Amino acid sequence: MRLLLVEDDPRIARFLAKGLREQAYAVDVAATGDDALYQAAINPYDLVILDVMIPGRDGFEVCSELRKSGQRMPILMLTARDAVEDRIAGLDHGADDYLTKPFEFRELLARLRALLRRSGELRPAKITVDDLVLNTGAQSVSRGGLAIPLTAKEYALLEFLARNSGRVVGRAEIAEHVWDETFDPFSNLIEVYVNRVRRKIDEGFPCPLLHTRRGSGYVLGSATGSASAEATEETIPARRGKTASSARKSHG
Image (tube, rainbow, N blue to C red; front, side, top):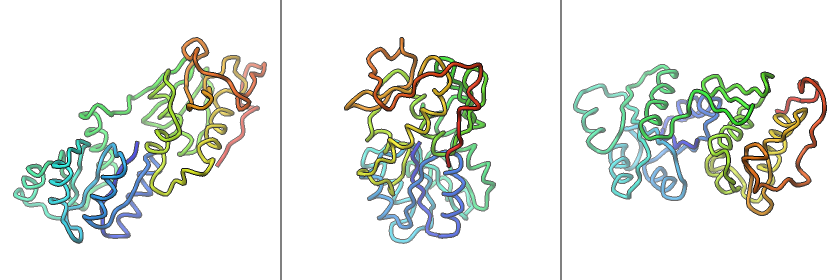
């Protein structure tokens, strides 16, 4: 999932962005109200974390402008002001929730989950695709009962594919939801990560789950459920054996 973090304090912005990325969120950072509105106009976001006291147009104005432009993603406002009037003002301008500084990072994560649940974008506690199981809370993956170690970005990619299992997902859609604004659309980074994930979840198993649809994108699912998917030269052949742990390598 891709978030927009609007925070003018560089230290706080770095801390929050780092923590959120470690939770497999893609994060873009804006330091001013105008920059936030520009980013929201050109990028699709699943949620916005918006500080009230930012240069230029403040958080209230930004929130109001986002709603006027038809943006319906959840907005969580951050502020050092704890007055009831400020919280009411934020909610009246279109915010969905309010968090007062200082706060515990785990509370921020809990509020994000609650907002995504309300918007229908919640990560379910468990995602199962054939014998592949993702525990979204722990960000752990197993297949056939065997644990599969993934980096944060590999996990984010696999979770996005799993949440869209059975349908073809193109490069542009993956870039929008798994990577942030620093992503270079002309790079082969997506292909590199798809190959890494494919090796980790398919190698050593008789039925490959991650398929390439030539010219269209990728689809996660069994061969039966993904009959339209075409295996390409990227597909790793199955290997015989009771376990896959010896065949996997960890990728950073």
